[in-house]
Amino acid sequence: ALRIAVFASGQGSNFQAIIDAVQNGKLDVTIELLVCDKPAAPVVERARKASVDTFLFAPKEYPSREAYEAEIIAELERRGVELIVLAGYMRIITSVLVEPFYGRMINIHPALLPAFPGVNAIQQALAYGVKLTGVTVHYVDGGMDSGPIIAQRVVEVADEDTEDSLAVRIHAAEQALLPGVIQRIAQGRVTLDGRHVRVSSS
Ligand code: GAR
Image (cartoon, rainbow, N blue to C red; front, side, top):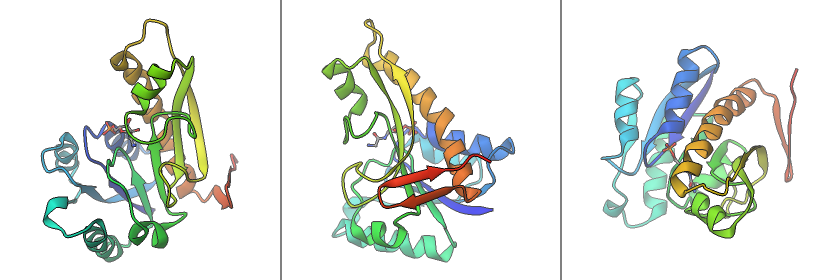
């Protein structure tokens, strides 16, 4: 089974969806590690309950992003991690992580990229007034949410939506999409060719 690490900073609903898919036999991976920069984040408790090891770090205790990323890389290599899944990891990633893991690191984003990259994407979409938004899973490159797109799902925006009501449907779409994308990667069905990603079905 593919050995994965999940990076998360917050609630961990996507992390939980991955755990559930593994437990239900729908996702053939082993979750080697949760990497988290927020000791009090609810995702940490989810990892504990599922007996997933956690690498917790406080960014302030390091001189630079590169310094903590070098420690993370050592930990990932020690555990033979083959794929990194960024699931609500709210930190900028540097080349220390991107270069060795290019093509082996994916991110989930709560908008239809390239629209609304960066933070507060749900709020950005609502403020802009788009009628359709959604979620994107993409490979991570050196830019901000700019890497090759693997899969997207559309979510309609209703006139009466608030940020909270839209977020509920965005999160449901993410949890429906992400485990299946990871499974296709684990099955070797996803190929990356420049900016273009092909996902074969059979
Ligand atoms: C998700 O909506 C994810 O797409 C978003 O953070 C949320 C994490 O939720 N990520 C970003 O905004 C990255 N820029 P979760 O902790 O419940 O999975």
